[in-house]
Amino acid sequence: MCGIAGIVNYKEDISNDYYIIKNMTKTLTKRGPDEDGLYFSKHANLGHRRLSIIDIENGKQPMSFRVDEVTYTIVYNGQLYNTKELREVLKSNGFIFKGHSDTEVLLKAYIFYGKDICKYLNGIFAFAIWNDKKGEIFIARDHFGIKPLYYTFSENNLIFGSEVKVLLQHPKVEKAIDKTGVAELFGIGPSHSPGVSPFRGIEELESAHFLVYNKDGIRKERYWEIETKEHTDDLETTCEKLRFLLKDSIERQLVSDVPIGTLLSGGLDSSIISKYASDYYKEKYGKKLDTFSVDYVDQDKNFVKSDFQPNTDNYYIDIMVNYLDTNHHRIVLDTPELVDGLEDALVARDFPGMADVDSSYLLFFKEVKKDITVALSGECADEIFGGYPWYFREDALNSNTFPWSIALEERQNLLNPNISNEVSIKEYVKEKYEQELEKVKCLETDTEDNKLHRKLIYLTSNWFMQTLLDRTDRMCMYNGFEVRVPFCDYRIVEYAWNIPWEMKAYKGREKGLLRYAMEGLLPEEIIYRKKSPYPKTHNPNYLKIVKSKLSKIMEREDAPINKLLNRQYILDIINTDGKAFTRPWFGQLMTGPQLMSYLCQVNMWLEKYQPKIEL
Image 1 (cartoon, rainbow, N blue to C red):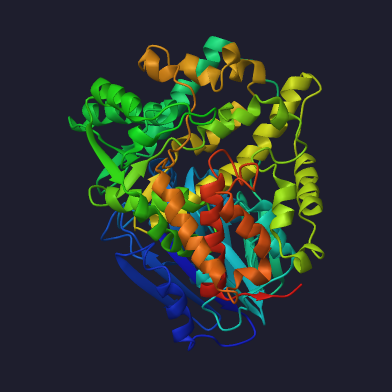
Image 2: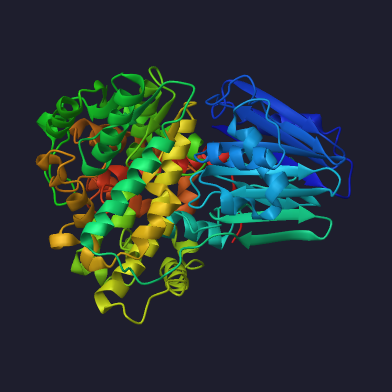
């Protein structure tokens, strides 16, 4: 896992712009703490920061390979899970390998397959390959955007990198937000529209896309999308195929030359990951698997049950640790740490995010990194198998908007009145929602219920899931730590997409099919535990601390947040402990205290990044 940066300019010689690419690459030090590398040529400069996972000696980047008088140079962030198969195909076609890194395999696979390369990849990736003879850069991103890639075009320069902060180091890149940026931050945020960033002119290469830039200009193309087709397997066959795909995905993702483990919450998804990983470790290495969980000081004492979070994790974690006999590590975070971590979490994301959920992840991964460098997570099962409450709640099913973000009127009220007159949150979100629904393909044989849930699963997988993947990537990579997500194997998603809702919601349960498929493999208490999200702190001190922090910001009338947002509404939120904002800001967990944390992050962002607001 790493970070990449690059500049391509066909009209000027940029080989001597050493300081620019060096500064861009330096911003990625936390993503790649182990080493750096730079490549210079007349029209392309590339940078790389490395977190060494596979073939530590022979995987250094930028990596170049010369064939038929053409030199190909790659910078790559990611991990391929079908490296072995690709290497065998390439060997049979005359390629010779110096080491066993997936970087070398990816570079030579591109030379062999050309622009069709992504059709042969199973993994998480964002990479760029420069062809010095053609004068062409090829940039690609994985099927679900697990690895990030941003780019902009300014004064003949194509500028790209793993994070927005990379691009902002280039002197030609301006920090400005317009109406779209405001609507993204406060209408969609902390999610974002695919391909869009709040900064004007800075785009995200969408998942499952590649980009080619040469003297003819920029061309962008989708290389993969889910095919809608009839599901013909019966229940038992479907379960059998799911078990095979899950086991295969998890075992592929356990490849590493550094210590690896799993994140275990005691929920269904992380327990599935840990079950298959533990079995694999015992069989292959005769060793116990390392598992990790997060909790908060006095959480059991302060926990308040809700529809979204019905119970705490510890009881279920103990069941799984005893069942699998893992080497378990409990990470306990304290309340002040969560607030102190808000700024680092903001910097890691480059934008206001999921408040203390982000900072909790960041602090959790910081502690886990002390023992391992790679972990497998159960994220993304809820999106593709129907695990969220909004798949079942009538108010969400009939909301006619993104069901994890229905407080549109409150979001509009949060804007400074002058800006609110210029930006319609409701219209912006409505347009995005309707544009996305048009992309959903249904079958004539689909029931009305199945059509509705196809739409919800599509929206959740392409929007909400991306937010969680962004969160995981930024918070783990800020600690030089890698998290893998086996449920996001494109083969699993392809297969699950066409399973009818009636089967997915077997016996009327969230993830009912997945639960049934795991019978006999996991304890029943785990299989039929009600869905519970990543734990947030219930310590009342968190509200006190974050309320005090936001109050101090609002005491300064020159605080930049006042130019963007409605000062009186924020004061009402503070005075009512967040109850003035009547519905969750985002998802299930971002209620009053988290909204106040988000507002603190907004002010930090305005102070730290100092974007021009140009409506």
